[in-house]
Figure 1: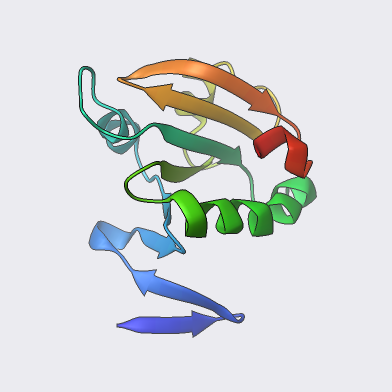
Figure 2: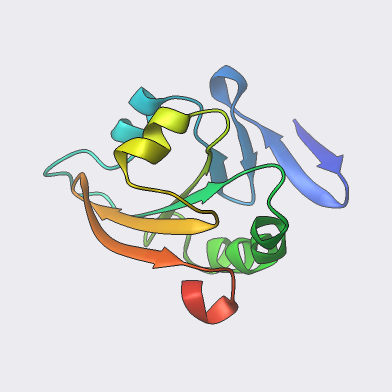
Length: 122
């Protein structure tokens, strides 16, 4: 059942995950690794590393939601990772500042983007 939260459509997900316009919240390292398995015929993953206190991260969310509405599914998967909830994942991928974006394909990082301007993620 869909709920409205601060004007956004929020769908209840499996095992506590929240899906917001196609952007999934990653809740564990195992779940993150399952997003882009090696040698899979799956779309690339845009992983968004963020934190609740990060104002630039909040500012970039409308741009991510726009991208998600256009590309999510067949062309792209999108995942949001809270570095305060899963700090080991941030360390493992060398994330030292947020917002930071990783593009993964077949289990490997193929691009790393930093910053919150629309040109950084477009």
